Amino acid sequence: MKKIFGAKKSKEPPPTIQDATNQINKRGESVDEKIRKLDEELSRYKEQIRRTRPGPSQEAIKARAIRLLKHKRMYEEQRNMLYNQTYNLDQVGFAAEGLKDAQQTMNAMKAANKELKGMMKTVKIEDIDNMQDEMTDLMDVSNEVQESLGRSYNIPDDVDEEELMGELDGLEADMEFESAAVPSYLQPDEEADLNLPAAPTYPTAVPVNRHQEDELGLPLVPRASLRS
Image (cartoon, rainbow, N blue to C red; front, side, top):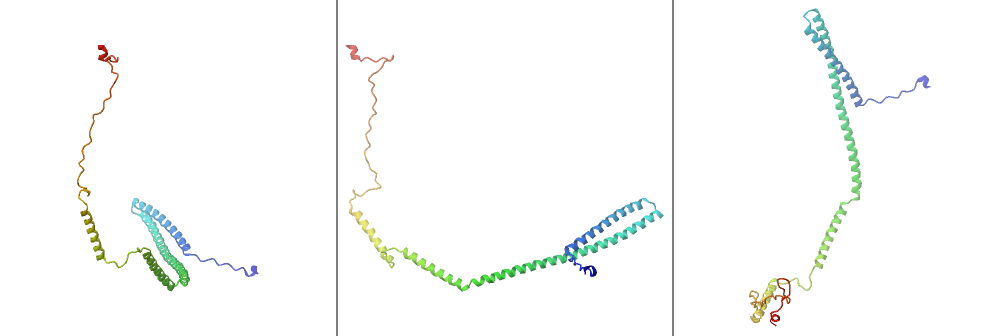
């Protein structure tokens, strides 16, 4: 059956924007190469026209140069058209990339929105408020416990400061009375210096050499023995 009716040909995928841009760029490069060759020939004809004298030969060279100029302008128009096509393809490509980025952004935002909705179902504002209230109560209780533990014993809270100052003045008066009752010679005088006699000094003892020697190093004989 395939030999009779023929097999169905598979369709080729349409070219992408990048493929079309690459193809146009290749055509533009070939056109630029042709324009470059025409410029070289025109420069050569220009040199020949400058060297030849006016006449039929110079006119023939000018005619060929004019023909090349027409071809050059035609190629330049084609190159401008290709440049415009490339510009349009670039704009379409930028727009397509922007749409793809926007689509990806939307998909990411949808996924994040769905995830946030699932998380918000497990979190309730009332529970958070209740937890904050409980934490406040616990902190108040903790402060009360600390104040209770830090309270001093046997010290009434309603103590009059004027009464305490009066008691302090009475203690100072008692101390002055006790110091006045002690005789002056028994009271320590911090400012007076103790006038004590100086310690006696004795001359230092000189060691006595029992065996004295003369100039020759011999022991001296006592005088009494010499008299005897």
